[in-house]
Amino acid sequence: MSKQNFESALATHVTQVHKAPSPQRDLWPGIEHALNEPERSSKSSKPKASRLIAMAAAITLVGVSTWFVAYQHSAQVTSDQMISALEQKHSHELQGLLTQFKGRPALTKNWEEQLKELDEAAKAIKLALDNDPMNPTLLKMLQSVYQQQVQLVERVHVPKWSKV
Image (cartoon, rainbow, N blue to C red; front, side):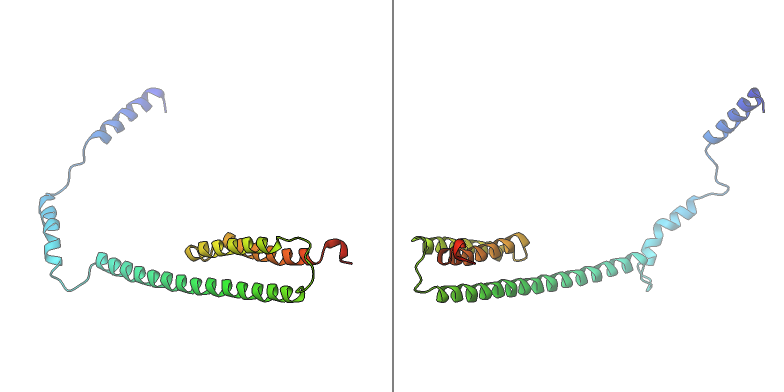
């Protein structure tokens, strides 16, 4: 195809593209019918697809909401149970150590004050856990404070150099 044939063919196609296509028949009766159709179809007994979609969305929303509430409740119970078990284990271990070392001299005089400070820290962490019960960082902090209390009692009564 030569350059001149190509340009004339291109010009012909461009002029045809810019022309608006004419409908082969009068479209106004169909448009009028389509505009009046929603009034007639609302009286019909057949549900429209949009109604079915809205109903499905509402049912899905209720289902997801119910699941979410149930999951949050079970997570709360699980967290409370976990904190309670952690407290019981710690209390049992600490009381066992205090009973074991009762009557033995302590290496420092203020160890009971340090134990109380750690207890206050544990109370503060538990208050924070009331607001965010499944926070893994807070749970680890509580466990760490409990472990520090146990280590404090052990170190005060049994120094490292005496362990063999």
